[in-house]
Image (cartoon, rainbow, N blue to C red; front, side):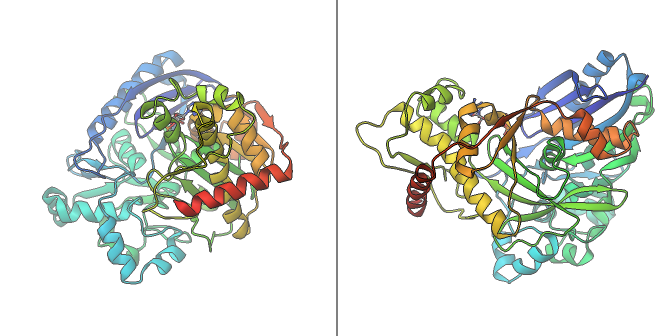
Length: 489
Ligand code: ADP
């Protein structure tokens, strides 16, 4: 019986194909690294043709492990959000390199829009801030700077899309669609709007005709061209990576929260069907759209999480591998007053201080590797604590925190999070929550489950739980140290 789900997981550094059984157990996977292009400081590009080629290669590697395309019930796609691809609808070929979410080249345009007083209105309508992170200003940059993109716009053959949209076009042989979670990261769709908004397109100078149709995230969304895999496979799940992880952690009821600790950290809280309005510079975003019905999330991101541990490893040589930070942290009773503010590339939510830089305070001759490693891990709980305060101020206090991402493997950090937040922290045994979330949407969309809730209940794996256990005065001391250090950043 065809009951495998094929997930295409389009990350920033790699493309993967993962085969899930209908109960959520991973059966096989294949992975290929993506080339990162850095043409100038602050610029990051991908080759969209490479993304497509490697996606196809990974899919072809795992499909035989299911017993062939006939055994695959459905495909789910999850992707790095905000990255923009421009292609020609008539040839199906990219017109220029994709501009990656991390790329900062549109900062001057964002400043111009902010100075013209547009930010409050844009935030109210889209839930986002005027920051180069989001897709819309990247599209405008391509139109202004790549003659082929402008020419295709004039000819009426230009297609813009995020990575899931590009893959849908290639897989289906020409459908130009984007799911609501990815669309909600462009600055071009209102949180309350069904489709891209003409007024927002005019403000950013992006032709509405070049944009995809916004579709659901689960259901009959398209079918692969028969020539690709020998059979038309239904595509029944489409979702941006952070929303996928939120779903993969089964945060499907209002208030449920997940935090992903990878290179950076991303926290999303389910808001139910209420459109989020942050007073604390958090983002509002679409979490799910199924049968035209939406749920929303509040999102806060921290720029530096695991990358701080990488810095300890690669620049300071304090550890050989990231996981050694755990032994070092456990080897001492406290960090002797050492505090790290990991603002190595500015501070994200809720501070949003792009110009801030990192600080280490409280150094003495007694400070060594262990103190620095422990202070680096403590900084994760401090940053998360500040986010928790901002979420609570927006009326969304967390109940438990569900964690994932590469850093979440660190037990000491998981316990410290529970202690500092004063909340239980849960961590699934199966840590690939992003791919799992896409599998849940695809499984529900293909009718293997009656709805997303039942898919999540069955497919979600076992959890480890960390209970808070810290004296209040210890926590207060830590927070006082953190606040002082933060003021110096
Ligand atoms: P991304 O998806 O952003 O590439 P991952 O989720 O793979 O990141 O997480 C990798 C990051 O987690 C790296 O920055 C690494 O330094 C950090 N990391 C991995 N394992 C541990 C660990 N046991 N303790 C602390 N940090 C870790």
